[in-house]
Image (tube, rainbow over all chains, first blue to last red; front, side):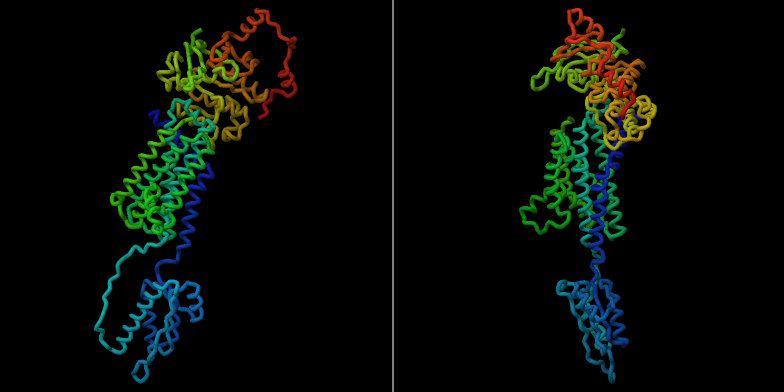
Length: 365
Length: 252
């Protein structure tokens, strides 16, 4: 084996051991993202796009059975049979979008004539859209039944075709956000503190006493972070897909590629800070100054649509905005990196900037 | 005796125009223990670091084992072992893992346990450096300088801060290294240590070498100039008393 390869391998092995034996690093870069993902996953679970309907049937005839069957056949509805009182309570709590009460005389024939009867519906005022949509559907079902029973031909009709939507929820929005946040922390905090500690303690200087240029150690450290970032992406996407119904519309290759570009950008920040700082006390404020605005303003937890336009313009240029936005576009809309020229150029420019600065400010001692 | 290191007119001027080393010349013989003594700020560490290829040489030449340090610092580093004044190592790595890593960096193959046994740390093989005592840390630090079977080992104040037991234990280790034919260059503030260990010493002050000879010769020269110690030197020292009362066993 070539001596340079052997040195790089030895330093990578050492860096890997240092990483996984560092409990703090494991907690911050692996366990916290998983915990966050699970929290958001459980929060958004069951609050899918289906409309919750509570049905109380007082009728017993064939017509009411048909009506219930049709209602249950609509996939967008989650229809439960429930007592009138319980339905009212659930509606009040917001657990139901619509309450339906089928009266006793619904569909009952008397002397070959259908009795006049009306289905009563009540919807949740807090979520009027769902309730109104459901209401319309029910009106449609009832009038169809009515026409069938009275044998009156339908003259006006609407033919609608279902369009497959991605059925994206908040979880699909949040997962790429959590992943980009993790990548940022892995790059900036994950490298800056550890590296500057080795610099301050003299461990780095000891390395300089060997025939290996310490830049190999920088590569080894970076490589380990890269592996951890990809492992994170794998775990978060895997967990998200398996447990919480995450939709990956785009290619895993593109997704991984953005993760790699992202970790390289933030490693650049990390090494620039570590290379510039003399000890840990200098790292903390600078690292926080860089991380906090990105954490809050890059739209990783909530969309930036609500920002005033000047703030939106500024945050457009944040590296974390580019990373999280492109991850989200790839995952949620299935586009490829080629379709995201703005993000791609933005990330490339940041790469050049951070490494230019890092090389300029870097000091081994 | 053949020389293994030749230092010729070596000078170091820092950016702030401070001249730390002012044109010193000396040679070190193969297989000897060579001491560099001097008060703080005399330029000992700067001299060592220039020889080791860790610090830029302002002017002059260092030729180590036939190689010019300034031209091929990495080749020089390949052949020497360096113990820095404040030795620190990567955290969370066991002693054996660190030794194996260092061996890989030199492209050499070692038996980490044997090497640890040589410095009396075999039973600490799976310890982390932070869990070692001061003396054990220094012994481990010396072990890391031996992974490449160096021709010269540089020890910068290896016994500073150690208790007398640990210090004497380290002396034994240094003599052991010498007995294998390895040249040792050591800096120290302890004169009895220099007298015990060194074949020859260079005394530095203000960036210059003010004397260079064997400890015995230097003492003889001083006495020859009519020097008399202020008090009668007793045949034993307080250090001897301490060791006699507390024993030689290491208190790690």
